[in-house]
Every structure is written in C-alpha cells, then in structure tokens.
Length: 60
Image (cartoon, rainbow, N blue to C red):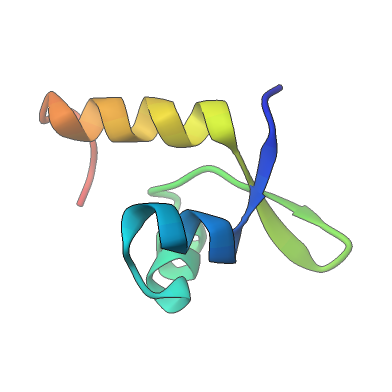
C-alpha cells in the first residue's frame, strides 16, 4: 500500500473540487477506503487510475 491521500489532497493534485472526488469514490470510479469517517485514496490507486485515463481505459 502506498501513501494514503485525503480527498482534499487528491482534489488539489487533480485540480478538481472535493465534491467531484467524493462523487468518483461513491460511484466506484475511484477506489478509496474509509478510515475514521474520512475517505483515503491510496496514492498507487490514484496513479493507476490516472494511467488508465491516459490510455482511454478509465471511466469518466
């Protein structure tokens, strides 16, 4: 497992609003775990998701 990122950190990295990241998580587009009431996204999962989007394999 890589570094766990908060929704806020992922939103900053991607230049998106936090609500968009939460929507991606709830819809299953982006993998996340829920720890102590907050979503956390594994940095490796985020990188894999971004790579799939680059190659046209990812959703949204």
